[in-house]
Image (cartoon, rainbow, N blue to C red; front, side):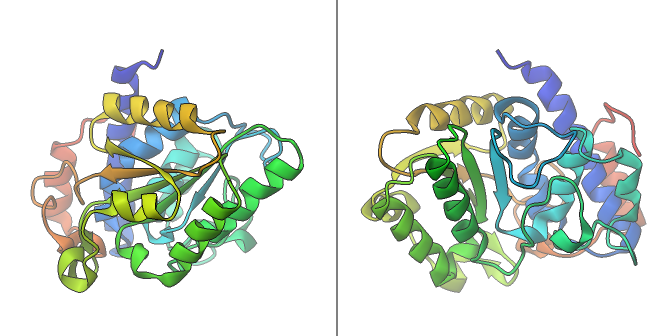
Length: 281
């Protein structure tokens, strides 16, 4: 059984990493990263079967995670470092020249844990489907997890991948949508609204469920339920409800923190709301 209190402590430290990384270079995407910290923590510290060291690019015999909305790289990098893929102090090189931690994850940097270059929105899910099919062909029983942003669903390639996955019964794939209702230019409902996501995915032939993404206990339970639904002939889709910027009070509820960095005073305010639990880098 998962130690929820420990996972919450890890998530708090990951959130501290996020705001410090983005502040240090005055560049990056804190909003979605903060909102997804519980999901990444549950995935990398409890749910996934994975081996940080040594890292194998092919992921054979392991669960594999693909980040499609690659701009939330701060939370990804922190989760990777804190779970043992590379040294935690390397987080201080985020978005700097010659760093392996670029704004969007990139494979040519040879950063352990990164299997695809992502951030060109709409593409990551197709890769995840391909990996899941490869595992099936190789009789590898492990699961492929993919994370997409809700604004990213405005890319047509997402729906091509969903249609393909459902048609081909790719049932070792769990697709999570970060449904925070925000994107860079405003609320998703105002930019290109899609109403209730669940029936849309169900119409394509997916097994759809909902999950509260900013409650660690519910995230752990939701991911466990999603894994239990695999193997039934349908890809599993989790509509994960989060708040962009959670739980930093001046970030929550606004799309404006999608891609701007906190100033010095805002950093101190954010850190005061996020307990240091594992030690800052």
